[in-house]
Length: 465
Ligand code: FAD
Ligand code: NAD
Image: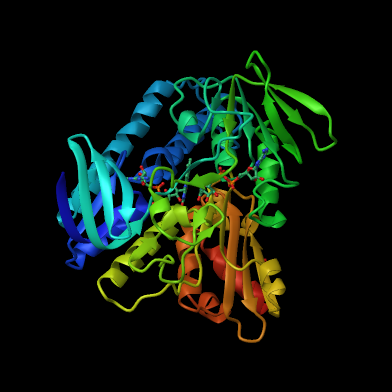
């Protein structure tokens, strides 16, 4: 059995793992990364990137369909669009392939050794990897667990046949006529919206009393309204129970306790993601757990010296940019730099229509934390750029500490607001006050002007409303 000895071993090449390995390589650490499937992890192969590609396809199709139906207010007409979903999926796969190659090139550039195979701990310093050419032993001073997450499978709705996960949904080559979605969270609503735009009759079954329970009702209201406009039926407080024996319908229990049948060609189950630790040999270690997730401290250290964990395997929020930030930090810690998790915020973006962004504290969270706050909320209906994009729904909301004007949180819902998330994050990370944002010249006409106006509004002197 060949043996490799290195300074840093990263298990899993998702956004957490590959960023950690690249940064470690840049810092001159002798680094090995092990990946059992494809470089880029869930994010690049079956998550963020492919889902946003298919959401884009759906948006373009909807625009063309609106023109064909004479629904645009600016007189655009077209003939009815046709979509070759196979070609769309091939286009999406091409983007994924380019990014896979990009990650491999970046790892090579940083002199990181890539080992393909499944890793299993033998002890706290040693891992055995099953590769195509046989088992390999890797010994490392520091090991980073970055094995990510996988879709939760409901025992009464196992994946297979017409019951699909997000991975299956992103590979469909025909648009299902009727799609039932179990779980009205991030994935269910992002993909449910895309399939509705492509022509599916979509029904969403959500166990909680509201969609996207992570965001407050003010932010989700415009999304709920648009779901209805798209003809998506949302059943709240309802629980999936299983498939009919024929597999042609989903059985649910409604909020009122009645049994209901939802005819469906495909049932997409998106009820959260679980950490991937199976077969990793965690029983050889003594790691404190946080439920099923690995417990970490503010340096992403586990309860065992020399073992760190990053990304989805450590729990919520399961977001690619959080995993990347943790990966970068852990590489610097392994190189002996003084680092600890000191971020003020992790932006959350939901790519529904309209999109939602939340950075920092919402008004309710700030009040719950005992803070005295002032807020400003500026509607896109009063923003010139939103009007010219024919996307006036939504608003920007800013939350600041009443006495100091320190910005605690910024949220928005509206068309294309995902691109404002970096401005929001920057403002909070740099400790901006309302005056800082209000006093910054925001280019005209842009959606960003609504951020400046929200700050002015919190200060009591908005101009354009
Ligand atoms: P992963 O990306 O899951 O990578 C873990 C890697 O470890 C995998 O490649 C796996 O094969 C490998 N691995 C596991 N076990 C072993 C082992 N024993 N040996 C070797 N390798 C192993 N997040 C966002 O921020 N924005 C989005 O828009 C977004 N959209 C999403 C859409 C969908 C449909 C899904 C499913 C997820 C989405 N996410 C999004 C979440 C995002 O994909 C994850 O938060 C992110 O991928 C987590 O990164 P990670 O590095 O922790 O793990
Ligand atoms: P989620 O946690 O966002 O939503 C799951 C939903 O399913 C919840 O609303 C929950 O109440 C509901 N649910 C649970 N059990 C149910 C049942 N038996 N019947 C009906 N409803 C049920 O999970 P997800 O959509 O699977 O996404 C997983 C993770 O991936 C997210 O937590 C997020 O971190 C990440 N993600 C992020 C993005 C993004 O950043 N834009 C996009 C997709 C996924």
